[in-house]
Amino acid sequence: MRALYTKGIIVELSEVVPWGRTLSEYRKIFSLTSDDLGKKILGCGDGPASFNVELNTNGGNVTSIDPIYQFSPDQIRSRIEEVYPQIMDQVSKNHTDYVWNDIESVEELGKVRMEAMNIFLRDYENNQKTGRYIKASLPTLSFDDGEFELALCSHYLFLYSEHVNLNEHIQSMKELCRVAKEVRVYPLLSISNNEESSHLHPVKVELERDGVNVSLVPVKYEFQKGATRMLVAKNV
Ligand SMILES: C[S@@+](CC[C@H](N)C(=O)[O-])C[C@H]1O[C@@H](n2cnc3c(N)ncnc32)[C@H](O)[C@@H]1O
Image (cartoon, rainbow, N blue to C red; front, side, top):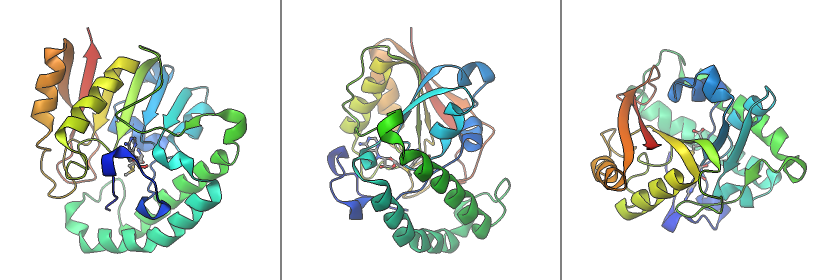
């Protein structure tokens, strides 16, 4: 599951590898309580996840940012159809890198992901009305300081440590801590070797130097083998 994240700006549709998760997965990934679900949330790098529409239709308040929102629903749909067989093939080949508990097979994974992405696409068709999907790229966001109570970043920072360098990680985390009172990031492993990202420690040190409280918290979710913790950063 590789994508090119050159300087954080995606310019070609061919650079996009759309793959989206559900509200139920986000709840487990980030240990979201019912109190959390009522907060004003920024979903960072949400791509074609159904998290935004599922929570908003249940009374939530989520805004998502992602560079892929520069593309139309039809463009994203056709890119999903193009890369889906390649992703499934890669997951089958690397089957032992994953924990097959909640999702029991590669086929089930494909079904769950396609359902999530189709739910997203139907909602994204109405984005001109709802405005809940905003084209933007870390490390620069146009939101005000403290505009969100909680920012969530699923499967972008730390995961793509080979594509996004340390300085971009530090600037991105500082930016997320600027716009949100609390930031949660998962997973903390790099996709290239399934080991803890080499950026994790220096990012933690840098945020703590700025007075941000950083902790690594166990979660009750594991699909990428060994990905059992999230980073929680809180402005104090
Ligand atoms: C693997 S997908 C994860 C999608 C979703 N968060 C989920 O967990 O289902 C990674 C996402 O990061 C987005 N991304 C890439 N570069 C980014 C950047 N500079 N800032 C924010 N998001 C970015 C991609 O477009 C893609 O949608």
